[in-house]
Image (cartoon, rainbow, N blue to C red; front, side):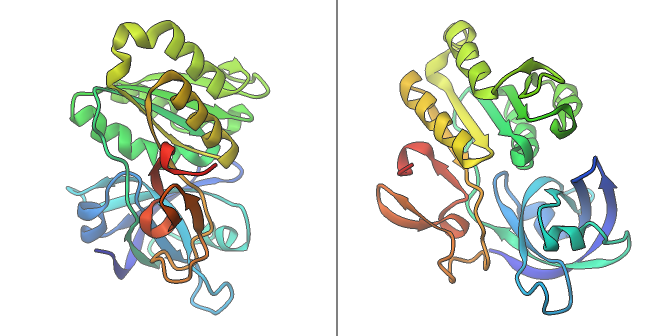
Length: 261
């Protein structure tokens, strides 16, 4: 059940020109948040901007009673958020939404750009459950590749692709995923594998196609403008095989077979 509370900013890191990581204090969110869930952040005490910003839980630390948010400056709200100082407080609503379900032996985590945000949390949980974790990170340039070293230190096998070839392989991460499935996954136990992905809609659509073709289960975390975060405003509706659903309330994580792409 989500709650609204003021959370103190314990750390605020500028990772590159547009990516930032916030560490906030909350006993409740750190202990109740699950991989794939998100929070709604009020970036100003004024009425402009009026709406909160939805941001995925990057990771939690119940022992320290903290949680982390990874975000990118994409507009006025996140620009204002990037100015927040350590020691200040932010009004947070969460945790919200439905997260990932770890139910297989092998986890294939596929991130496109800022889609890496919820997958660090998921990888930690998968490793605690002694699952084999393979992380595929795709980005336009090397500057947008976030968390590669963290995943390796956790024991994940990491594969990176950039569109300009500045780090890792040149091209699309979905091409490397197909190659991995065709050349390595069958020997590892393909029927007991699941793809978990977050990123741009076009990439997630390709992930759904790959999952169908290769007969692998896949869960995708959708990016949408979630104004209320509670399913009340109906602004984040998507069409599924079971009618329209709200990304904020029914998701943001869905079985890819459920979505009408």
